[in-house]
Image (cartoon, rainbow, N blue to C red; front, side, top):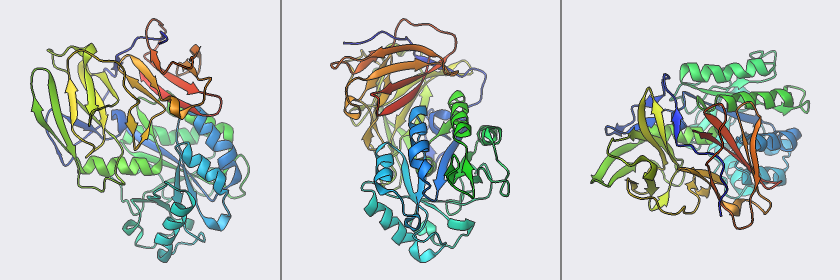
Length: 419
């Protein structure tokens, strides 16, 4: 059983420049996005020192807005491990901030293991230097390490010391309100870079620097409003994307009049580097666009037809070394299981003209709400217990982009949808 909501297929980006990287070996006509979804820039929100409101206020806020954050944890501050494990289970990253909040090269590996043991399943690939001091050797243990020296970082940063901007401190950068916070978004877009927020407290729970919750909420709204231009993800996942992007090889393996088989590989450790890259190729005139499907290793992946400067592209998400990608132009089949995303089933995905809800990620009483980018509700529906697919047909509204929010009252997930 399905619910008719809204018909869409194409994302209009006409007249704008999208970001493309010249990766290791990307065969024409394929292109790999500098940032996910071919956004112009990236941002990450990171939080240090285990303040209480990070878990009780910031995590629920990020869940509500449909974004993920990175919590850099140190045992020195006696963290709430149950709360941290819960945050990790909701998609947020847990990184290391050392054992004793001291920059000591001898505890790089020990602090990583402490996080791994305390938060089962967290690989702990990210490190934040305490006190903005940088002993050498972090890159021998971690994929990426965060420093403190402004914004934005370039599209390929120094992974041993990626600069970040301290928030809510007049002494370090004077980013004191939402207007200052939004400048990091603008800079990432304008410079095709990666702006990283360095928070400590939230809503007055830390003497040194505490970000007001309302400012944080408004900043996330600003990011959502510019979601077609800026990509917001955890520190570790952005680092994964960059390293995969710079190492990837994309080439056509086979083709006929009904399909193209694409090989996507890199030289990285697949246990760590398993984040999907955004890849696109021009749509051919001979394709039956409504029936195009994209699968990797036999499983559906996220795909969409986008228009860039009047030219149509098929954009899809694929993991290097995740198996051959097969693009077919024949008749569509019924919707399959939810797409595999970074090793886990994504709670909500778009598959052509449908939303696919992974019911295993939710309890019963699932609601689907559509919002425009100003936060106004377009439509709200309750799924029946046997419903997992939402067919988007029939509703019209001004604008080309909306947010689909899925919630069971406890777990919430959002997806940006482009017509």
